[in-house]
Length: 203
Image 1: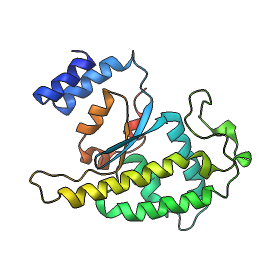
Image 2: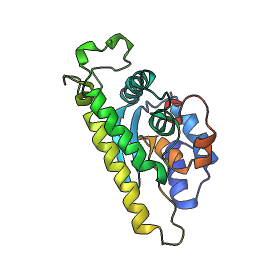
Image 3: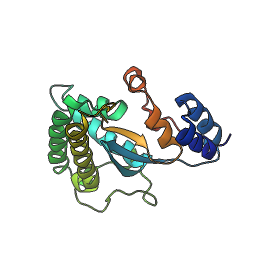
Image 4: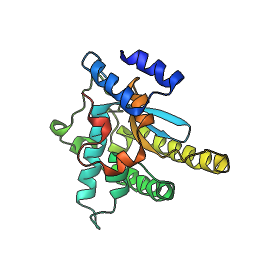
């Protein structure tokens, strides 16, 4: 069964997570899947190539390393990066992201050592010509805010419906068929994860 057939099976016959994942892995060698998205509620917002997102967290970790307390940005550097944001974490994470935007606005792109950046200018969707890091990642800040609000809105609108499950804010692979894999992935798998996040584990 190829990846597209797995996708059809999942949509019509309820394929399990393991069914889909096995087919995706077999097909991944011939497919370049590098586009990353941010999901939350009913929203799925594409961020761009994986290298762009990796660079955002590289910059964020550099900021966190010189900030006290040391775990101040953990909701972003661990929960968002590697896992997902729970309902009660959304507002604190949104406030932290706004602080990041303020701090990034103080960092000139001319001061960035681009040799450390995994970004490919020919494929990047970042605003690399902007004068500050806040400008470079302006779309990320906007899309994060959008997904947080979408998750909060869906919870308020649908929490009374039978079978409703909170749709957390998390980073996923935007390309089919890996998006299907991420959508079927149990949240417990994210909680147990050590090392690289799932969105960086697909070559």
